[in-house]
Image (cartoon, rainbow, N blue to C red; front, side, top):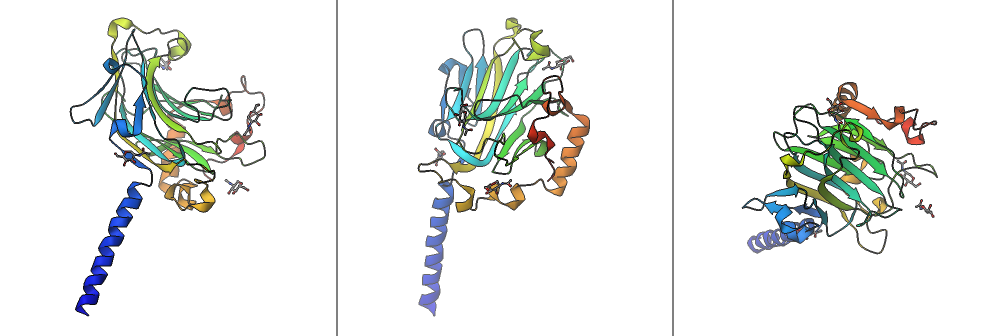
Length: 298
Ligand SMILES: *[C@@H]1O[C@H](CO)[C@@H](O)[C@H](O)[C@H]1NC(C)=O
Ligand SMILES: *[C@@H]1O[C@H](CO)[C@@H](O)[C@H](O)[C@H]1NC(C)=O
Ligand SMILES: *[C@@H]1O[C@H](CO)[C@@H](O)[C@H](O)[C@H]1NC(C)=O
Ligand SMILES: CC(=O)N[C@H]1CO[C@H](CO)[C@@H](O)[C@@H]1O
């Protein structure tokens, strides 16, 4: 009996070690910058805090700055905490996005969070967009219910075969459903890299390009921390990440729809913070794109 119990305990220990090993190789990415990311700017424009936990990206007249995951992923949960450039940040765009190509090629898929700076005291706008096979034009713009330059807030993307959800501090601000028709406009096939960047977009970003960057305020610094990717790392051959062969939490029934609490939060955002919705833009779209007819609460 005695020896049985101890060998059971032994087996249990081995199993939990194996479980730990497997779960840490399952695509959860936290911290450790160089291991998981490459930067695309001079060292002067990318700095970290002493403990390596906060990453500072700088834009000035010499350079912009960005970083990208070494690995690509298909479906999952992508999240970061971000503190935006304060003061006069008109023309500066900070981004957290996903793209199927390292260099923005003509047939890319993309899921974007873009933070459009503004003059001191004027509100930042969040622009989100979805690209499918090289076409975009799915912009929405939201105001925020807080000042995103004062502190870190969490911005997250949930991506699975049924929906793309953009979250701000766990509040779903936008739900983009999969129409699933033969001509649907939903990026689901190609794995994507995860990017972050800060750059000069004063030809379009603030009041349609009227407000230019005031370089006297440079350098502009955006701060990132707690980058989390809980997703399926892409491996050949396809379909290593296909939903039918896996049981990841992000591709199960609960993640295919908003929860009832999320539906209430979503409705609150729709009532109070939407500034622009391409689905309502009859000047740009004579016919409503088909995904606009889908119910985000389904
Ligand atoms: C993407 O667009 C290209 C060029 O228009 C087309 O040849 C290709 O079939 C498209 N791919 C998908 C997956 O829609
Ligand atoms: C879309 O179609 C595919 C293939 O028929 C199916 O596996 C998937 O569950 C469908 N998705 C939705 C959102 O209906
Ligand atoms: C910047 O502030 C102006 C004035 O309040 C506002 O009209 C605009 O929507 C704000 N954001 C952007 C990105 O232009
Ligand atoms: C996908 C990937 O490269 N993941 C790595 C991220 O960094 C951790 C260590 O912090 C590694 O264990 C992962 O393999």
